[in-house]
Amino acid sequence: MNKTKGIRKSLSMILVILMIFGCIGFTGCGKKSAKALSENWAADSQAAENLRSYVSKVTNKNDSENFIPEEDRIAVFDMDGTLVCETYYTYYDTMMFINYCLVDHPEKVSDELKAVAAEIRPGYSAGEELARNFAKAYEGMTVQELYDYAVNFGQQETASFKNMRYIDGFYLPMVELVKYLYDNGFTIYVVSGTERTTTRAIIANSPISEYVSPTHVIGTEFEVKVKGSEDVPSNMDYKYADGDELVFSGGFIQKNLNANKTIWIDREIGKRPVLAFGNSGSDTSMMNYAIDKRNPYPTAAYMIVADDDVREWGTQDWAEKSAAYEEQGYVPISMKNDFLKIYPDSIEKADEQYIETEVKKVASNNIVHFLKQKLARAS
Image (cartoon, rainbow, N blue to C red):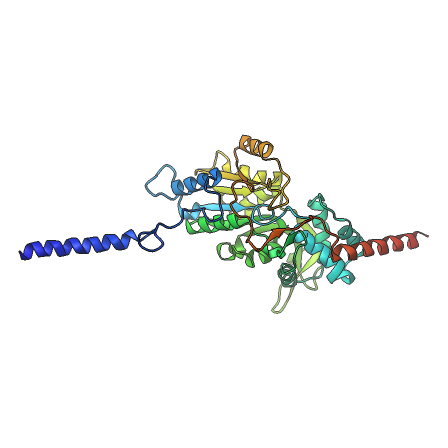
């Protein structure tokens, strides 16, 4: 009899243990936790399913053929247009440049730079020439001053959306994805065409701040010198001393697009990523570097297609873009169909994408002033 009671007691304890452990993976006993990538991703999203399948495969220690050790789980993300809004009038760093030159500090920049800022319109090229002008505009600022300016600028609202500050433009599905990868042992790098200090300021004040270290930000490079030695050709010709400031010299080093992304990933990470995320042709070098056949691990690359013209200002054709990306070996992600939500409910698309804001009014006045000065000098 006592033996029977002992068996029953043991069985009861086992049942309790099973019930306790049965709650693991549940939100409260008896209630399953939400499926990964389901909060802001469409239920029928093939891209989300592809991502879930990939992560499940490479994190399974029992799958010796596909398992990737944590130290080699590296995911690289472009920022503008991939993590954060890029499809309105202009994006963060360009609007910051316009604001700096024409509103906040016109006294610190040349008339030529004011003219450049005033002439920027939708469809402009965010290439090396414009980046060189950005570098000139911030000449003399300390690295910390540019960082702080970028943080403060992020609090301004864009006219292209209702209730959106520039720092609020992060895509909710991509924020969810970054957290999902981070929770599964991936190291996240942001590899951006935006200048590095500005990118660090944006990421540090974003919803992905706790998943991306400042040391894991790679961006466009402007020349930095120790204050007082800006005109010294080589940094080897002087030494940093206690209390010295690092300042932007106005010089330009490189725009972090196309092949530069690949080169700087190699230089700063020293390993091939296994996952890459982008949204344009300037990201394809980074994609190709990740999925190169010489990568010893399973790899994947994903491209965001800006095809949502209702919740966003997307103009891309899904059929055309998705076919082109698939041909290159990338998995296309539709903002229209794969993203269940793009922004918080409080944010709505404005009635117009391009609005003559106060910044642009100031810009118009400055360009007129600039042209008058040119004519006066010529005569």
